Image 1 (cartoon, rainbow, N blue to C red):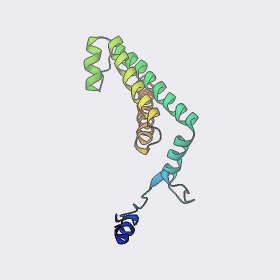
Image 2: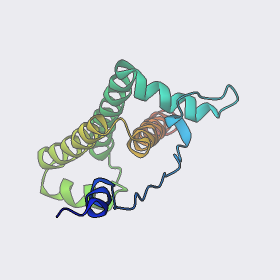
Image 3: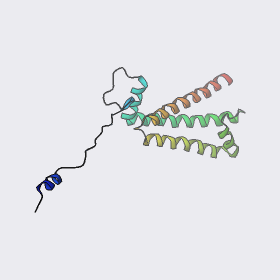
Image 4: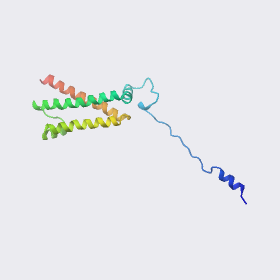
Length: 149
């Protein structure tokens, strides 16, 4: 004899359905509908993220400023100035070719990492910071040439 009650109980899903919903916690430029009053740097980072050509131009500028820093540093060292960066000072002790290779390859590698991780906020911020730092270093070199001759 078949117990009808047992069959009905088996047809029902006896597992308790446990469900939960995580709230979406987007911030910054990840919002789908940005507010018109969002910060200017958030909009700039969003522009770098959404426009790959703008990011390429920024990374190219970082690399060109890095190269200009190296060339201007070589010129300043030939005129008797000293290198302020202790790592580069040690590398210049081995020769300018090694120092130049190290400096250019490190910044090119960092640029590649920023390009590969461009969908995240922190690498874009690092790229903007690198552009600012190398821009200030370039201005320092130019000011040194103007004021010191």
